[in-house]
Length: 288
Ligand code: C2E
Ligand code: MG
Ligand code: MG
Ligand code: MG
Image (cartoon, rainbow, N blue to C red):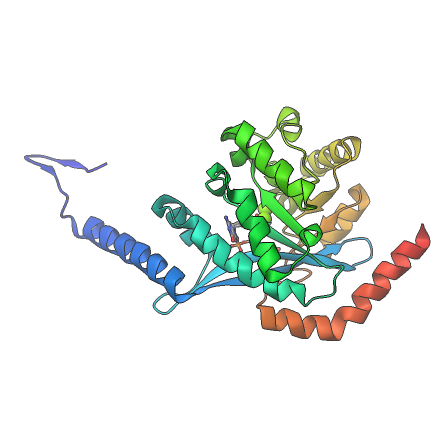
């Protein structure tokens, strides 16, 4: 809202506001040009079995390599791309790159991608994603989509049919950022989810509060009851990992395991660590 300022009713030309409008316009133009120039890149964060430390896959997190702003985080450009109506173009460009990167990893490793609720308003979304996988020669069984409860307030009938088409082709579906919003037990059943991801706000609070341990334990037992495995995100320290291990069985990710890395860094990592990950998984398989 413009401020009322005596006889000058609206001071539209307050320098700060003018500056904000100009930088917003620059941001919008930069994003549009950046999509055309291929400046949006996939980074990858490790996902592991916290009990064995075995690598199970990576979550792709988009970054914008802007010639003017440097490396920009998705919290800055995703909302703007949604408002500009270009989120699908941006998303499909980074997912396409990610599918081609991940195709060359060990075939047991999964790729998780975040999908905006805006993309789930497109009746052709599932077809488009399947087409990207076909073009990249990437098996849908290795793809996991992460959606938030925001998708559940959209046209739930459409969202359910999109999710069902993808699941029929082998894609798995996670509920991201569980615990921060209003997601309830009923919402967990609104879609055939395969996994729950506990938001990192909870995990980081675990170090400071006993209540949080009880909340996470509750989520873990809901997950167990509904046959939904749980991933904990934002594991920054060994202490947090150990606290989680005492509560239950989780997949995990976070800076303790590794920060998001480029495709090239992942390639190098997999060359040196592949044996480790495979051995750990083989050992786990041998236990049951
Ligand atoms: P998210 O999917 O919940 O991803 C987790 C975020 O937490 C990532 O931030 C990740 O870098 C950060 N993170 C992970 N582990 C730790 C940790 O141990 N400590 C701390 N401090 N942070 C950690 P990022 O990459 O900035 O992404 C933010 C959000 O942007 C994501 O939240 C996701 O909702 C969205 N996003 C990212 N890429 C895409 C995309 O391609 N499409 C869409 N629609 N959304 C995306
Ligand atoms: Mg996510
Ligand atoms: Mg999350
Ligand atoms: Mg988030």
